[in-house]
Length: 329
Image (cartoon, rainbow, N blue to C red; front, side, top):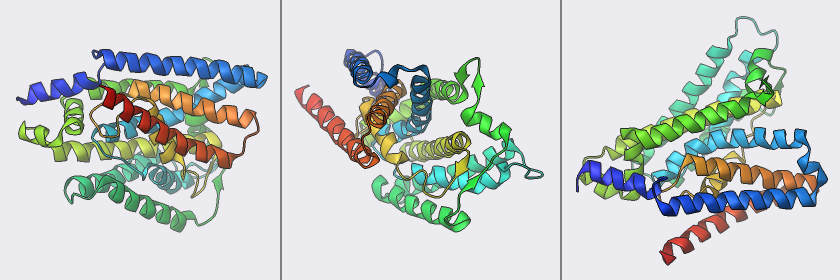
């Protein structure tokens, strides 16, 4: 089997050309519509324009983070460190964005954050690809390291009061559309193109579909893995900055639950935890479903503790449903 044939089969297995994938997307869209109707009936406040915009804004941030997680899961891996990396990168650059901070630059601060994310992703990728640590263990270790570094940097303090030009990234509006929504659409488009139309993307799918066969066919599996984790680290860092820009505050623990939500959105979007199948467009739908569920629970006065439990239950149910679907086929 040639490299081109293997990569083509892997892409078609998770691509729009597959009737199975089209059916999966349609079923998730139907679920999204059903959830919308249910929430509209459960709370009149759900249909208010301000609430709907807030749901889309929150879903956009989760979508961006989940795009990186989707690439990792496509390789058959997982990254538990994205929330901590988002926190670390944003804490390291938060001081640069304070109101009245002399000599600071938004571009410099963003570049610093992305560099931190890339370095964390590089370490994750090398541990997975070269040291051969299980992705769960490697990224769990990075999660603890990043959390510890965040605490060392700012302790238990909260940094708030950022510059207006930085806050525009998370709270700005252009033509009535919140900036994060526009950024999310751009990120989904770029990651979709990379994963579907480039050699790197085909290598990602091939690696997740059958790592050994991909290696025998000439795919640089280790290089693809390192690149995926680096890109995921960069996306996590950028997402952290967007969260901080929107909230106008940075603290060491703000990203503790982000990795769980990103995994949930990805598997709800149809990505297989075993790798080789999934798509960022499905992930965007999964992120919107996640945020609608959380928003509906908030509107109906359900405790945030139950929200965490529900997120875990969603992951379990989504993985079980995917496994049952594969057994039937």
